[in-house]
Image 1 (spheres, rainbow, N blue to C red):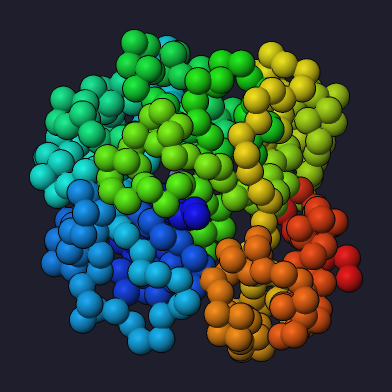
Image 2: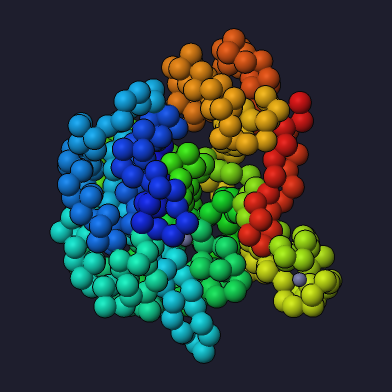
Length: 406
Ligand SMILES: [Zn+2]
Ligand SMILES: [Zn+2]
């Protein structure tokens, strides 16, 4: 048996997030999606920190449950998820004569560690202004502080390849972990591939061989939870086991991934100019936009191409591609909006009739079972599992588009 974990989540206190990003809705949607371990998001935000303290009850070492009286009615078919104390920090600093902007996800074992982190990073930014606070702090200094506070605190680079705000991003990142973290780089053992890259792309770099690839949703609204997840063995039932899995690989079973083309930064281009290019086309243009002449935003494919030292990926981690069920349902019923009543009704009917979570339906349910609820959705799931989808790659902040070829 396996448990799906989503350890990069935001609360309603982060910029551009849904008002519904509160604990009851996160739990309610985690149960619909099939997520067994979910990040709290944003623990450095003072108001959210207070809510977490009032609403969560520790069920095993470092794993928390939402108070019974806060549960929403009619939760999904999945078991109630365990919450893990989690935040994302946005580091902005200068190193090597260049401006660096790097996002890091931090997991904490308990509220004492959370409060110590808040005290340590507080002087470097305005924690109350954003659930994902901007800090004028070097990644090296942050990691050094965290290690001093509690050896069980775990940090990993977020969406490692996106051009802005990522450790390996083309605009303001580094070429290697060692360049960013010197002697402390050994403490980084996991890398979030992000929506726009997948394990095979990352395994083009021998530099990353010692890292475990993880994937999470970076959800800004509850219905986006679990769009990517990492799979753990069910024996991972407390914080220490979780961190051990992320450090040693013991109990880490793989990931469920977006097709990287669906992500916002797979290809190169300029969104405002309507220019989408492959890395080869971008190189032939000298990295400049054919419309406005300014430097192109280089996506994950281009950036990995630049840094890769292998012709083919090696030692690729186990993973499965999946497309969110609401996307398949909306195309099955021929409605554009995934939040339309028609789509929501059929989505709810699928979960209820099959008594299964979204991930279970996408990955495991027999097609004939799904057919009994809706033939077109069953066909869409089958085509997805067979990898028969038409995908227009995303670029410069524009999501890719998936079409099911019915
Ligand atoms: Zn981020
Ligand atoms: Zn342009």
